[in-house]
Structure formats: C-alpha cells, structure tokens
Image (cartoon, rainbow, N blue to C red; front, side, top):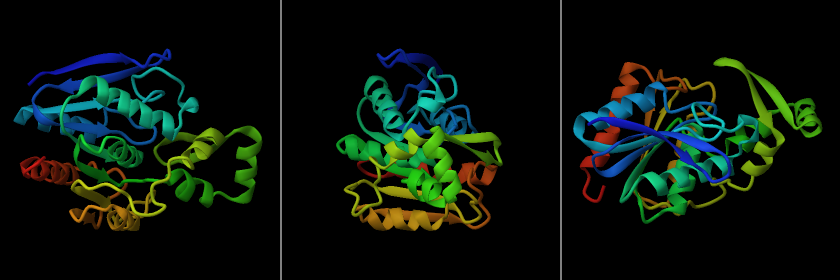
Length: 252
C-alpha cells in the first residue's frame, strides 16, 4: 500500500498536514503528543505496519505542530481535540482504532467520548489525560504560577530540546476538558502501554485510566525499563502486537 499526503483546510486559515494509507477497516488513527508530530518513530512504525498488512491508517499534525500551519502558542487542548475530529471526519470512514501518545492519549479519550459509535478500540502510549492540571499547574512553584498569570506564558526547561512554552490559555482551557473527574463512559476495548521509568508521566496514571473507563475490557501493559517515549525497537514491537491483537478481535 502507498501512503498519500495532503493538507486539510480547517476553514479558519489553518491547514493540517496529514498522511494516509488506504486499506481495510477499521482505520488506525495515530494521535501525537504535546510538541510532537506525525514524523516520530511510533507514528511512522505504525504507518509501515498498516501498509504491510493492507490496513487503513491516518496520521496528522495538530495545528502549530510539525508540518501543519498555525502558531503553537495559540494551541489548546480544545483546539487540538477539534483538529482530531476535523481530520477524522474528513479523511476516514467507518470504525476507528485510536492510538494516542502522551497528550494524544488525552485527545484519544476525548475523541472516543465525542464519537462513541465510531471508535472500536483505543490504545494509549504513556497516556497523559488532564496533564495541564495534574502535571503542569499543580507541579509549578507559586512563583512560576505567578509568572504564568502575569505574562501569559512560562518557559520550562525540557530534556528533549528547547524550553517548553506553557501558556495560560493552555492551562485554563485544559480545565474544560478534564476526563479523570469520575467514571469515563467509554465502552470499547482499551489498552494502555506505559513505561515504569517514565520521568514525565507517572505510570500509575495508566491504572487510574483503566479503573475509570467503563469498559470491562481495559488492560494496562507496563514496561519496567520503559521511558516516556517508548520508541525503542522492543517498544515498537509491543505497539504493533497490541494493535494487531485489537485488529483481530471480533467487532474491531
């Protein structure tokens, strides 16, 4: 199968870059993480996996990310979740298997809640729902919170490159999209892969997600020496195995 690429006009002056493999249903949709994009190891490995087996697959960049247009500093959880719905509505048909990495796990949960009739299964990789509150705002020192309130943006050192800009709009909007506030009405199979050596998102969060989704078919798969990215060859093999098993299930 050949992967095609294109750009999708959001109708607001923003274009989303996408890559798609035509193939059998359900369509595997990869949702990248915060400041990540569809060119990462997990996304490309999953695209190759789907192409080899003739499986439909979509990957794309949120606005302000990767090859898409827009300013990252203008982005919020609500805006990026809306990007996901726009891309899915325009570029896919039928059932979906959502694969979300880090922030993408939060976007996957929001997408499953918005399109329950279309989502056949959900896979989280170091899924980080509600991270704007739990892992950002609540972990900031009072002086950092004051800077964010005053300046509208706070730059936090990152082990992955340039300092990470955190905007007040991101924090405030994130509070409108929290999912770990009670039972989560998601009833499809859920698989949560998480490294126990993840320095960014505690692996215990995967247990909480599994507990709060209403589906009885929720499984947490822990990788004892796995980091946040889970993009080593063995990690990518685990991802492929997880998605392959869901594709083999009746109803997927």
